[in-house]
Length: 311
Ligand code: ADP
Image (cartoon, rainbow, N blue to C red; front, side):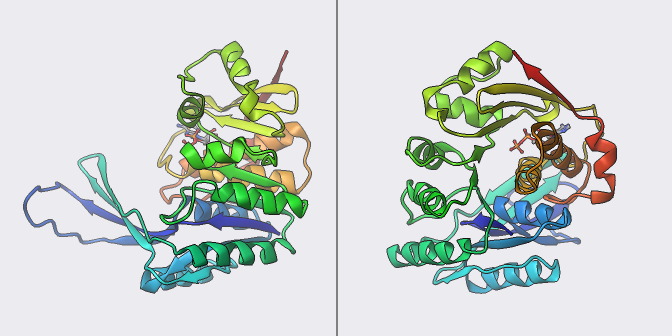
């Protein structure tokens, strides 16, 4: 079973309006509410790939209840720690071809809640074969919280894929107990290294050779429509994808993490792992719903992904 962690889930609300009026009333006819947060997208796509998954993290209040209800309706097994404060809403106003977002920062966790989740997490690891950790940390938890989760997992011999950014990712990387895989996009890679990653193959190779990445088995740098650049052990790969009709690219990185997790969990060969991760990313972009894939289209897209080993 893959354990998919979301520490700051949300109810994502989409408000489509023809024209967004400032300092005035905007009426919305069709409201769409979905359980959101990067880790929930990962869990959903893993479930759509028919792999066993358990979604965990922390949530609270009626918004938390709504998230659980949504997950149950989608048949996604879940086991979250209930916290005192209310989980967050994230609002996207879709107007005139644009998307204006209002994102709540979410609840603040107490120290006790932070400790309680680590205990719960350790318990859930018993039946897990692989872990994914996605997204931002909620307020109240230290930036080295993910590092602790990776350490606990590693001590139990469970590989972890971390898809986070900023300080919490940095903290994970500088620790001696390394994650099994990370999946930064180019912007996150630049932020991590402190310089721009708009680079050719040789530069990317050099970047992924950085001291900070030592000991990480899989470094998958996703590059949107350009596919991905990957380091696996001491080998480098360029993965290219076909030109496709994009409907909604939001959540593609999460779908990529889901594909990566499933393929690694199934012990697939390198080429197949990378093709799977790219395929799930692409399949997400061709759907309107965020963090959703049509598995029936998998083979068609999988066959179009090219993996080239770089010397
Ligand atoms: P993130 O969502 O984390 O920023 P990316 O934008 O790199 O991640 O997207 C992850 C993966 O999803 C890509 O590697 C690719 O497989 C697929 N993808 C994303 N955007 C596009 C696009 N415009 N066209 C084709 N595939 C895409």
